[in-house]
Length: 199
Image (cartoon, rainbow, N blue to C red; front, side, top):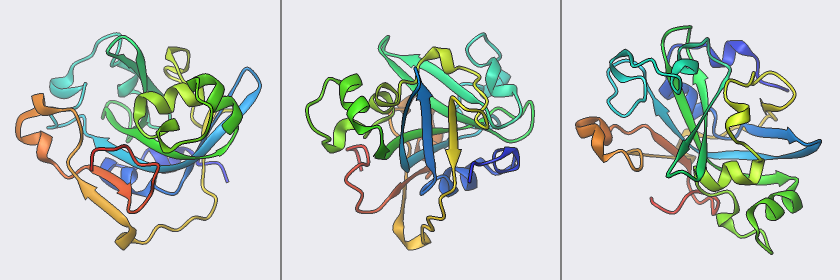
């Protein structure tokens, strides 16, 4: 069942980030379906989170989509090579987002391998937000895409993730955020080989 707007527009981005574990993300790019189960996420809050791009109400051409109502894609470029896929949550003008860091591939694996230039489906195929986007064909063209549409979307396939199976820790690569870098807002499935390497 495709996730609908009410899932994304809830006010607690940390809760949404946790509940995205076990959900499935799919893309249909150039007519090719790829996707898999989300196994790692990070939450970012528009209010009082120095790690968030919208901290201090920053509104730029890059961050403007963060101020939309939840249920759209925020895709941005890092290091000049990697596009990172984020899910905007909460009401309009709240600027909360969840970074999808890793998935367990389910469908379209051959296409993912082609996009990544890999011969076999090793865990690093989709373990990490940059390589995940390459595998799923996500780039700036999907900036602002409706997550209830037919190009990129999420589904609930009835997978229940017990609380004891969820690992919690600080987010990765945000040392600039000071004390906020220590917030336990990263979530991943314990024991999943598809989770990005830094534990």
